[in-house]
Amino acid sequence: MAKSSEEKILRNVLITRFSALGDVAMTIPIVYPMCEANPQVSFVFATRKMDEGLFINRPSNLIVLGIDLDNYSGIIGPVKLAKNLQYRYDFDAMADLHDVLRTKLMRVVLKCKKVNVAVIDKGRKEKRKLITGQTRAPLISTHARYKEVFKQLGLKLGEEFTSIIAHGGTLKSPIVPAKEDGDRWIAVAPFSQHQGKEYPLEQMQLVIGEMSRWEHCHLFLMGGGKNERDTLAPIMRRYSNVLSLPHIKHSFADELALLSHCDVMLTMDSANMHLASLVGLPTVSVWGATHPYCGFLGWHQALKDTVQLDLDCRPCSVFGNKKCRFGDYHCMRDIYPEMILKKVKTVLDR
Image (cartoon, rainbow, N blue to C red; front, side, top):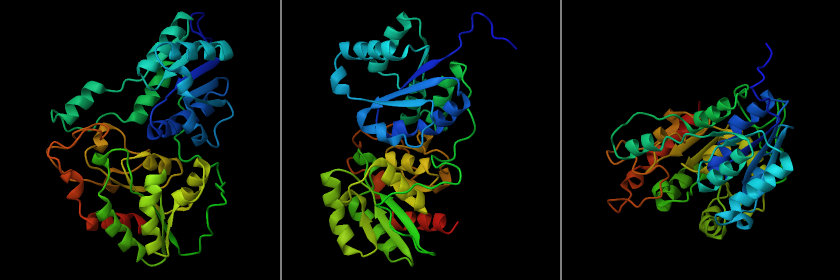
């Protein structure tokens, strides 16, 4: 059936998401198949410079622009950025997966240039009801919210995403050691940006110590930055089968290659959960101040593989950035190491 004269055929589409690494990683299971399903359209994904390397094995019609936001600060910065990008790519549409002041200003500029705009509905009111205890029902996932933006633009969503690894291929990296038959590799991501999302280190050390004694198991500790590297150093020295990734110079591609060879990841509600999802690695995720019901569980990760306590005060925050009203973060501290170990063992033996 021919398209109506009023229906605009899309040629170039801008996608925006400038936030934390985990939020950007969550776009990939939606963006990659969507790009593949619309080969006649060129897509430009604008994100933070530091997150650009995350988009490996991307579709041929997807350009990823890592933007140095320091060059586009203040109120004028987003206006300048939008004008520069529109001049360079001549967009027909914008898919705003962020909906913050920066992207709102960009939308104003592009709308003035007759660009069709679709915006994510973050469900802020629903999330507010969840963290205030007015509801205990799971909300729409962030992945579903991303999909809805592209549906608004009339784009096909494509097939269900499974992995960034091409069919029949592998991810290779010089940092990935040889894996012997019968070995079981466990990635451990013990850190998070906020205390309300981080299992206490002294308890995590008990978990790591016990897993290091499991037969044929090798542990890979994930983290970044000097503080996390210094924290992990004594743990790595204590066990011969524990390796700290922050002590090895590596890229996102290297990290994803390592995860693709692992059997399970133990993680917080953090970006590492979403990195694992990109290579189809099952995760055991530990939740404290936040809750999977807010919609941030990793792509195709199972709710049954989460570790969390049923408390009236949970969730108290969507992002885990609020201080504990009781001052003790008992939503994390009261999770016994044995609870986590049992869950990891279940996934390993599945």
